[in-house]
Length: 163
Image (cartoon, rainbow, N blue to C red; front, side, top):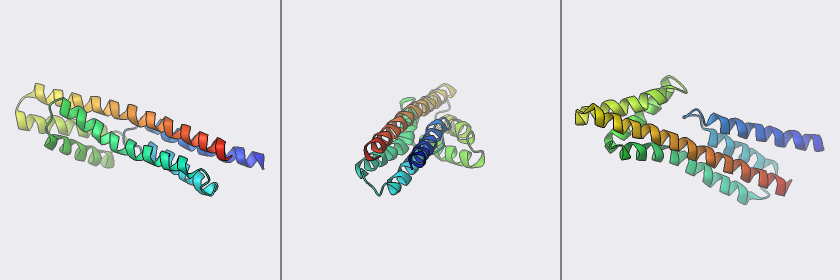
């Protein structure tokens, strides 16, 4: 019985760590994977300690939204128009679909650079906007990773409390 309990908890922890490590890949839904593992755990303990899952859910939603907000804010701080930011986000999604893992990393900033150049006819301004977008991508990773660590920590408290 104890061996099964240990195996189950270790397996869920490993899935969560895979989600956390996967956050290095910008489009990889690591926070969602951590949340899914917590969801499975919730079903396994008949929702004892459901408040932990509620908190994990809120953190996952914040992580998903923060990603696009951080990139957009970084680009806007670099001087990009909201139209260019929308084009960049759409291009990043298409790029990720066409070439998983790296397509979005390349196509998003490139689309922003081109869109800004077309609007302003100034490579320096276009580059500043793209640089801001890339800095926003870095901050998005920091936020997603930190929230992922917090989600795993809440799950660990939940597992420790519920047993």
